[in-house]
Amino acid sequence: MNHLEPKIYVSCLAAYNNGYMHGTWIDALQDVDALHGDVKKILASSPIRNADEWAIHDYEGFGDIRIEEYTGLSEISELAVFLAEHGELGAAAYAYSNNIADALKMLEENYHGEFVSEEDFAYYWTHEMDCREIPEYLEHYIDYQVMARDLFINDFLSLAINDKVHVFSYF
Image (cartoon, rainbow, N blue to C red; front, side, top):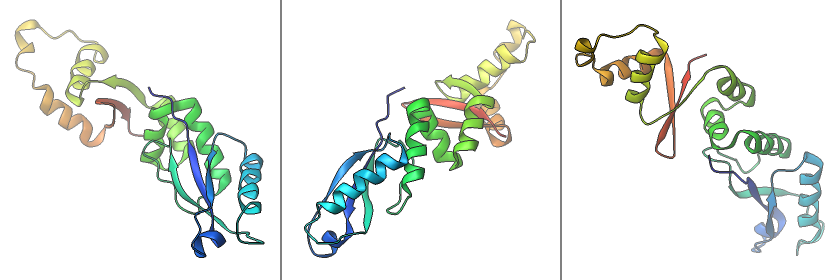
């Protein structure tokens, strides 16, 4: 998996509202106090005196996770730490669940692995997990595409990352 490097672009709202673009990119992989310190530096160097309001005007390195303009710095810090540990798969799980605890549960308790396709997972599930041997003469009658459709209706979830599917059982 690619390494994610979450960053946020923080802007001074007083400057923005007065026609100035004043802000900077901040490394999100810091504790909340360090993030607050960086925001204070941006506000202190604003072309508008006594600036005290800020907003996130851009972000990158969070995968499919959506960061809002007023997402709290504690949430930004928690997400960055989670992503540093779990990478793109963690970002996809969080984007699906929108909750770090649920995303962690998905990764630790419900993850079945990376596959080329849902059909590939159905083949794996049939041959590796079912533990019964399928006679060779019956193998050609199994429709793994239909089987995958049925498996992913109620029992499994797949998240696509880099042309692969990552399979989770529902929790």
